[in-house]
Image (cartoon, rainbow, N blue to C red; front, side, top):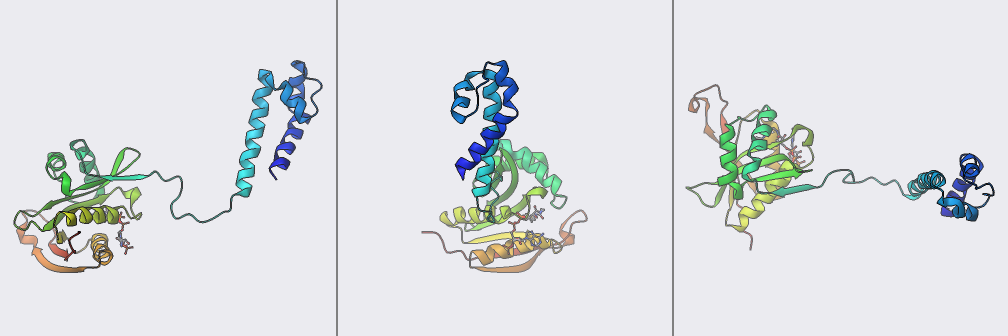
Length: 238
Ligand SMILES: CC(C)(COP(=O)(O)OP(=O)(O)OC[C@H]1O[C@@H](n2cnc3c(N)ncnc32)[C@H](O)[C@@H]1OP(=O)(O)O)[C@@H](O)C(=O)NCCC(=O)NCCS
């Protein structure tokens, strides 16, 4: 199959495109693949022949590759998960602002967070750009509780499992440091967030409970109530 593809390529090239070039270069007797290679040293000839061969070999590969569904497209950039650094604060603020859902805190709050709470926070990075984040802290009154403050994923990156992966990694790291429970607050109309944390409880094989925490009177502005969701207990990692 490979030989057929290559020789077919040479016949076409030899019979049509190359003849004027070879003639000008003193290559009149070009009739076989062997003579082709002998005259291939002329610059104009080399360029055209190489180009033609390449097209055929690519075509050959395509023919021989079975068309199979891929779980992950090969063109997807790889995702890196890591603790945020101070320099990521700008992107966290931008992502929160662009979400149109989250409370947008001051830029200073995000920069400070990346410095002081990096160990309980995480970012997802693709092509050197932070696309998603989770911010969290260990509750001072309850050192076995990780409180998740904000989760956000760039709109064009949603539905790919990024938020679930970030939370899974945060919980895994926190468990190794003695954390047994995760808390977060969610406003009643945020179905995506409720689904996200319910899925986390299911994946970690533990329970999820909801209680009232802050109602509208607890806020100075027109803020929705916030329900407290508690997930756990997680078995502490060995
Ligand atoms: C909520 C948000 C973080 C989800 O990010 P994501 O990367 O798309 O979520 P994932 O792909 O990891 O999905 C995790 C789970 O949540 C579910 N989920 C995510 N978005 C959902 C939606 N809009 N509706 C219903 N379920 C949703 C997924 O189906 C998945 O559950 P499964 O494992 O049972 O299938 C993202 O939509 C976002 O940034 N929203 C704006 C900010 C926000 O509301 N943050 C949450 C409050 S802090």
